[in-house]
Length: 148
Image (cartoon, rainbow, N blue to C red; front, side, top):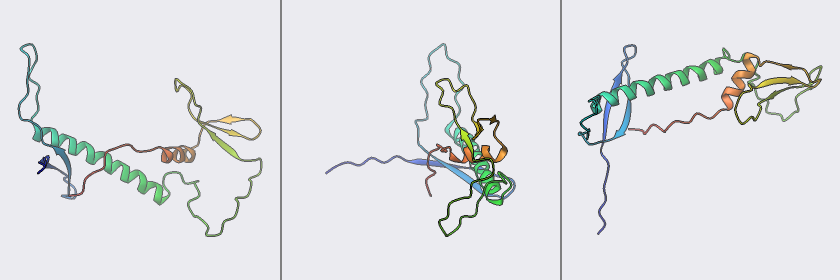
């Protein structure tokens, strides 16, 4: 017979004044004691306080991501980006003067910012729409929020 251990998870909601809804961060339980040396100061926060702070920070991040996506979907961010997709597979028409390419330099130090280059070799800074397009290509690393 195999023994199975489970982690208990504590949930403490972060309250919001506007809607009354609360985002809950799920964290594994931790011991309620801390080993300190004689030289160390006691700056320990109990788990309830840490959970409440983490939940509030995570909720702020989720709300800001939602607002960014909503602004994109409403056309407020990146108004020049073509959002309508045709059902018919047709090639885009080449604009007068050629295409503009967005270039991300692959530098070891990351000194150079992305820029736009035209077919004739001229270089310029990115427009707001091109920046939105690049930002939407980046991944958003964050842990999955477990469903309760």
